[in-house]
Amino acid sequence: MTSYDPVLRASDADRDQTAAVLSEAFAAGRLTSVEHADRLEAAYAAVTMDDLVPLTRDLPDISAPARVTAAERQKVAAVFSKVVRGGRWIAGRHTALSATFGALIVDLSEAVLPGREITLEVNAYCGKLIVRVPRNAHVIDEVGALFAKRAVSGGTGDGEGPVIRVVGRAAFGKIIVSREKSDWNLPGTP
Image (cartoon, rainbow, N blue to C red; front, side, top):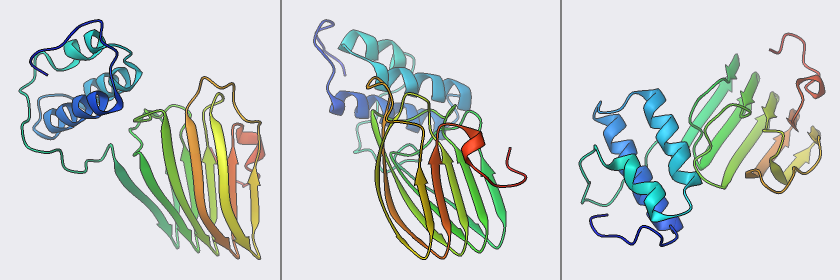
């Protein structure tokens, strides 16, 4: 991004390029995890090119094509165990969540979401998978179930929040996507 028009509106490709520079800087130790999360959040909220430039001004530019980073794809699994993921963390644009004979609890309410839309690929086989989404999120439910409980509750968001597409399946298990912890109905959940 050497030359730019500061009032020009930023495109998704511009935001992705900035995210790639930030991810490379984080991987190289130039940014702390908190700095990376803050700048990544600002990058995906940027409206103009002038909003993006300060985020990478103190970092070297990367000329090689960006490889898939943690900000793009993640996997969280619970196999014969209980796994809880919450607090401030960076979710992937495509995140695979699976619970096999265990419980997986993922709280996205404080997570940094790398873009306006993310996809959660869920799979619960003889397990429980619970996802808490931000209050203003719009959830698109595309989950199938076979001898399973599947619930998406808490409304459709306010239109200003992120779009969370939930795809996958539950077999002999339980998948709950909610905005409230009270909807989880799982003893011992945080």
